[in-house]
Length: 335
Image: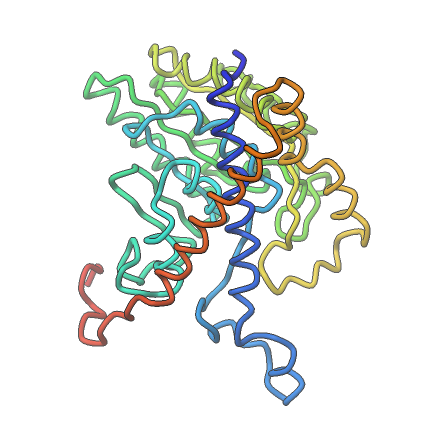
């Protein structure tokens, strides 16, 4: 299943938007946490600056999000991981409300009470969690609901290769296969489960090979390219919509930043990221579009400008929004 010119252009623009968003957030997140404060005798304060708390960025992993979400509609469900921004953006979650949530502002998706690992948007049927492997059970639940309602909606669970060693992975795949749920399990294999290499934590070279144990297709994508992910995801989504059950897709992708912002990355070879960036998926897709005369240099510049404008406006909205009132701290939460 090859992507149409329209889909290729959509994926390219979304990848540009995701990359600019993550790189902007990387800079904004460090405000108030930079070395000058440390030199004055103060330790790195994860709660300081305009964006408090942990921050996990997905620069380099854009193809996984856009290649899958290009097949989805508004009624389809996506459940992301603790590294969720690329999935949310590809699913259509509003940038302004998403950013305001990370800033802890009242205009955020969760009125500033969830933060970046707990984004929830019922309109676009997107959610995520900071718990490793927690995307899979909710995706099964959404798929079961769609099946019981007689809808052709599908659910997608995104997770990292480290999460494939969690009990939730095996339980979810077993249940999805047993009940033939319309769910697609998508594993982002960036080789690192926090600081532990896949080779030291996982007994198989490819997580996708585990699909056979549950009687479902297991698809491997060994290229960090949007087109390759799109072509692999298409049949899986179509299979789910037809009521033929779940699929497991594993994509070899690349993480350009640390596990979290502030990660010293002492576990990675010093030249690893620079080598990975030589195969950056964004210029790769741009080259394909230009080679097929689907995008000129001028159009590429317009796409980049549009994406950067949306990102800039989202961060401006978040900065200008108000914080929640103290008396509202217990509203909209479980008592």
